[in-house]
Length: 425
Ligand code: SF4
Image (cartoon, rainbow, N blue to C red):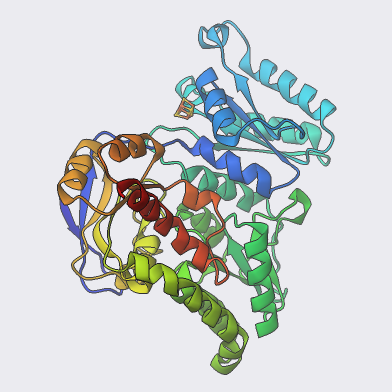
């Protein structure tokens, strides 16, 4: 099925093919791996099965020296058979956890496929537990289930759960800039510095590093999305009266400049000031790409739908590194949030929303791209067939946004090509 891009996009008409079939993606629980590092006094309690526990444990690695800030409350056969009172059991688990870990200030109950199948109402449980434990601990819930979702939606669901709990910004308060999406601390610090030097006084990040520092949100909030997969979070922010600033995403020199400029314009910063503040960083970012461009220009790349970062990455790779896009697949395509990105893609690009993994594998094999960006499950078989791959999950774990990370982002695509060239010698 083919769907022309709607009126909300500013780009010429791009053809977006929609595909449905078997999918090959991780579930939203994966987001816990980076979210528990970001919010330093939060704990993520998955209410799920042994499979969920295994996924989180293997994705996050075993923490030997630190107490982990995630765990799984296992739903067992007695629970499934309705022989146990799950509310009582969950209350008992949470009470013991909080008694043992007074450092926890924010507890997320994270739903999973099993908890959804048995219709366990975690939002009610979170309200009940929050009332009992406040003000020392706040308890929230969200779903990380793998039914019809992809792995970055876990972060979206988590941040969307935080928004209604954030302090209400008053209409009389000074306008604030809110940067939305979990970024590495080093990236956050760079953005904060650039934006403050430009003259933006009040800058917040969602999520904050500590539960007590979650930002006030209201009609005086203007927000920039740092990630393209935060659909529900953006909706929750808009419901609070906050205003979205549309822009490219901060990947590469061009994306970072457009993204920062959207904020600068919203806060009345003159272009000359903006240019003076960003000039040296922009220059460094461009220089960091020159070596990689030599290696990547003209190389053909194929994106399987996985992280929802595919469209901004494709824009960066085609415009700043001269790569040729054979196919850009993405699990979901938010036409409004990605309107600027779509307008910057080559007109003849093949865009596919959704997944039919067998059909995509067939097309990938037929195209024989130089590099395929895909989930972990597809990488090994493709490598075995002689195709170089890049794990898309690495692009979420690695700091890649902003000027100083532009070279690192390009390096992530150059490395697998170099490795394959060495293997072929
Ligand atoms: S939430 Fe669902 S998809 Fe994710 S690990 Fe648990 S059972 Fe598997």
